[in-house]
Length: 252
Image 1 (cartoon, rainbow, N blue to C red):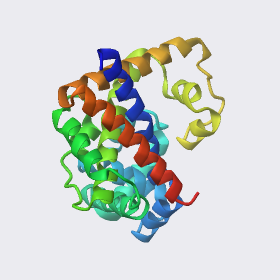
Image 2 (cartoon, rainbow, N blue to C red):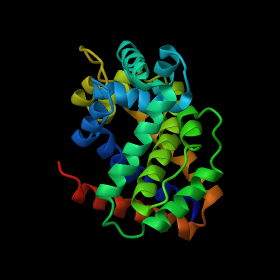
Image 3 (cartoon, one colour):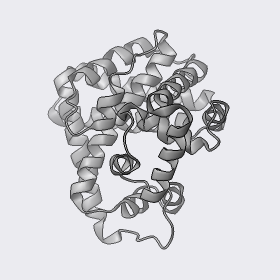
């Protein structure tokens, strides 16, 4: 596999991993589990759970690190969420929810042990300077059983790519609303707390494409530090297979 092949592998793995974890994060069962854990608003459980690995920090810090959320909205969700179980407690609850979702909906997937083996090599090799959410989540203990562990590995790798992407986005000059509109459009922009009118960012389309390219190039470098060319191609296929299995198993 050439360097372009490593780039292809990083790109091919990134999409399925992002989408698989999004299924968990946005699933009604996850929201119900957060409510059962004491969070009246499941988005408060999400915010405190995902950001809880950063410790008892300020709402302003969370807003800065979450990047693409409307600041007032995400600050309110953080403050409401940490009031329930604190930051560390929220992270622990969310981590167990991740494991439970994997146990339930990845149980029929093939190759999960190998996926986690390769994914953990990437996690171990990746630097975490300037990648706070990844730095926090990589320290969390992984479940012993293959389905739970695989989704947790996906979660950490999603935070890795997401943090790399946020850095590239920040220096690009594309604002969060423009990035949403250039990526997934109006409904997604609203979901992240932003209010209309929305700038569509059409004049920055080429710049956004370069953000994606820069993110994938950096991820390819991280893959290359951890995996052989053959392992990278295998990991990309295993990522796609795990995502497909999860989507097939989880109710809509």
